[in-house]
Amino acid sequence: MNVKKTPNNTRKILLSVNDLAVDYKTKTRVIHAVKKTSFNIKRGECLGLVGESGCGKTTIALSLLKLLPDNASINSGKISLSGKQIHDISENKFRNEIRWKKISMVFQGAMNSLNPVLRVGDQIIEPLTDHGIDKKSAKKKAKELLEEVGLKSAIYSRYPHELSGGMKQRIVIAMALITDPDLIILDEPTSALDVSVQAQIMNLLKKFKREKQLSFLFITHDIALASDLSDRLAVMSKGKLVEYGDIDSILKNPKEKFTRMLLESFPSLNKPITKKKISSSTKFIEIKNVNMTFKTRKRFFSTEDLHALSNISLDIYKGEALALVGESGSGKTTLARIIVNLLNPTSGNILVKNENLNSIVAEDLLSFRKRFQMIFQDPYSSLNTFMNVNTILEEPLLIHDFNDSSNRTEIIHKCLKSVQLTPPEEFLNKYPHMLSGGQRQRVGIARALVLNPDFLIADEPVSMIDASSRLDVLSVLQQLKEQNKITLLYITHDLATARVFSDRIAVMLNGMIIELGDSNEIVKNPMHPYTKSLIESIPDPNPNNRFIERNVVSNDLFSIKCTYLDTNNIIVDPHIEKLKNHKCRKSYPNMIKINKNHFVYCHRK
Image 1 (tube, rainbow, N blue to C red):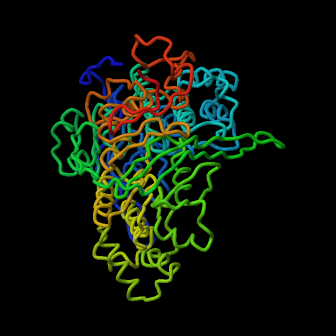
Image 2: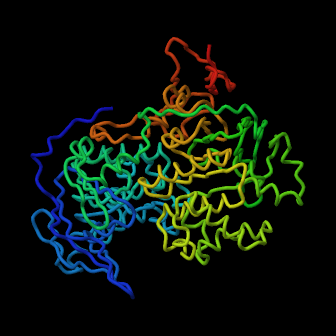
Image 3: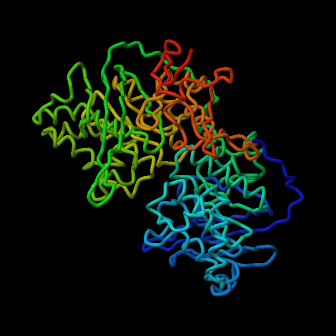
C-alpha cells in the first residue's frame, strides 16, 4: 500500500537541539557521551538517529525528557520545543507540562517496559490520571486507543505475561500516545521482535505519523529499518553527528566513511551473491520423522500437549551451512537441542554418520559433545562475567582432559586469531564487560572452536549485536567453515543474513518445515505464502520505504494448509485464482519437489 507524500519544506520546526553536550562522571574518569550535537525535528516528521551501541543515541533521548541518571550532566547546549526553551525549566514544571504531555517515549525492550503485576490498562491510563483526568474518562480513551493500535479493548484487563511480544509493543506504543503528545521518541522499538511483527509495528507507526501528524525521533542501529519511517537521518558515531540530512541524499550519496560502512554492512536481499557449490553428497546428519511434544499445565490438575515439532525430516550434508529460518516459537531451537542430544524426541530418529543418537550411552556423551558445539544467541549472558577470556576458552579444554598447559595456550591463541581477535595477548586477560558486543560474540565462537568440532550450531549468533558487526561475524564463521571443513546449522529469523551465509534454507512454521531449497532460490522464487510474507517484512535501505506499508501477515494467522486468515477471520487462498476450492483448504499437503533444489509443503498440480 502506498502512502500519500507530504511536502517536508512547509513544516514548522517542533524540536530544536543546539550544541548539546552530555558527560558521565565515573570513579576514574569523565566520559564525553554526547559532543556538541545539533539537530531539529519538524512537525509531522520523523528523524532517524542511527549509530552503534554506546554512541550516545539514548543519552540524547534521556536528555530531551530530563531523565538522565545522577552521574550525568548537560554541560552545554539548548533544547527548544515549539520555540520555547525547555532545558532549564524546573523538574516540577517539566513533569507537569512537558514530559509525556508534549514529549513521550517508547522505551527499548517492551518485555521489560511493563510492570508485571499491574493490568496493562492501568499502566496505559497512568499518565492521564497523573495529570488529573478522572479514571472513567481515561479508561474510555485507553480502550479506544487499544483499537487504534490493532488490539481488542478486552486486552485492557490483561496482565503483561498473557500477551505476545508484538502485543506488548503495541501496548507500549499506546502508552506513549495516550496524552496526545507532539513528539514521540522511539528507542529501538522493534529490537526484540520477529521480522513480521517488526513490519506490522512499522506499518502502525507510519499510520499514526500520517493520520495524527505526529513527529518521531527514531533511534536505531539499523539504517535499513530507519529508512522505513524516517524523512531525514542523523548518523552518529562516538558521541558526534557525522552526517545529517534528508534521507534521499544520505542513502543515495553518503559523504562519510562511517555512513558508507553502515550501508555496506547491511545484508540486502536484492544484491547478487555468488556461492561455491557444495560438492559433498555425503549425509552428515539424517533427521527422520522427528516429533517433539511437551506437557504444559492447563489448570491446577490437568495438562495439555504442546506439539513443538511435527514429523520433521531433513538431511544435512557434510561441509554445508544450512539455515533454519522461522519466527519465535516455530521450533528452531527445539530441533537444535535435539540434534546435540540435549533433548530426547518424543518419536523419530536422528542419525549422525549412520549412528543413531538414541543409542549413545552416557559414557560416550562427553566424546559426542566434543564433536558437536553451539554458539549461543546472547553474547551478554552466555559468557561468565567472573571469568576472563583465557579462562572461558580454557574451561572446555580442561573438561576434555587437555592436560598440557602449553598445548592449551597454543590452541587458545590459534582460536583467537581465527576469529580475528588479535593480538591474542591483548584479549586474554579481559573480562566480558570490557569487550564490545561483536568481540563477545567472537569469544563465544572461539569457545565453540577450541575442541575442533565437526558440527557447529549457531543459534541467532548476530541478532544481539550492532548491524555494522553482523556481516563481520558471519564472514568469520564462513571462513572457519571453509578452513576447518565444519558442517554448520545456522538458526535465525532473518532471511537476509540466511541468504548471505547459508548454502540452503529450511523455513519453519508451527513446528514444521514448510519450504526447503537453495538459499538464492528460496529468496528469488518463494513458493509458500509464509515465506513470501517473511521476505516482504525485510526492508532494504530505500528512501521510498516510508511511503509504503508492507503487506505482511502475522504468523499466528497462517495455516500449515498453505492458507491464512485475514483480519475478519476469512480464509485467504494465495494460490492461482483459477484453482478454486484448492486442495490446501481441505487437507494437509505433503512436501513436494518444485525443482532439483526446491521443495515446498503444498498441494500443487
